[in-house]
Amino acid sequence: MRLSLVILCYNERVGLEALLDRIPRDAVEEILAVDGGSRDGSVELLRAAGIPIHGQSERGRGEAFRVAFQEAKGDALVFFSPDGNEDPRDIPRFREYLERGCDMVIANRMSGGGRNEEDDRWLRWRKWANLAFTLMANVTWNRGGWVADTINGYRAISRSAWERMRASSSGYTIEYECSIRAFKHGLKVAEFATSEGARLDGREGSPSLATGIAFLKLYARELFHR
Image (cartoon, rainbow, N blue to C red; front, side):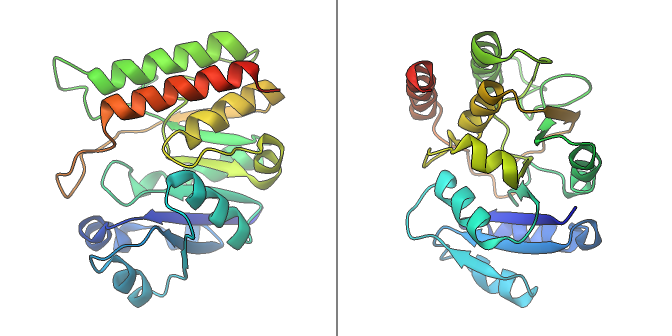
């Protein structure tokens, strides 16, 4: 199996400086980056590292996924965000599941030894919201083994699964949509435990309220989408 590593980038200079040298390049056959219009030197860092960069005609994480599948040559793509949340040491672990016939593999922060970045806090709003959306997706559509982290972006997707899912989200809902569509199609989804770190640049992730509303809208749409 030919595996492509996709670095998803939008103003991630701090993370790239810390993580580029830690990426196990020999774990994949191809490395490329999809950049959403960085202006902080991220593109220059990637270019200096010899990594091909592909731009987006439209903004959004979902659009980055589509560009990646258009440009990558792999039979499956691993999506990696260089912000500090995702551990590059996990990259080789995706292959074993894909080569066993899994259609999608998710790094699981929520159970089975996984760690979410909020686990050392009393109030874990994002984790609880993620668990709620995961519960909704599993109960509504999943007829296979329980999937504990339907939202995490650190995942691998086979090209054949991507073509079947026909995901259309433009933003941060792309991963949740892929999980739901995988359930609907009865695709084989696997997980392995990962430890999520804090963002290296200290920035917050996506706005919680707006993101939650977007996930609710996606869930409602998928209820009526065949």
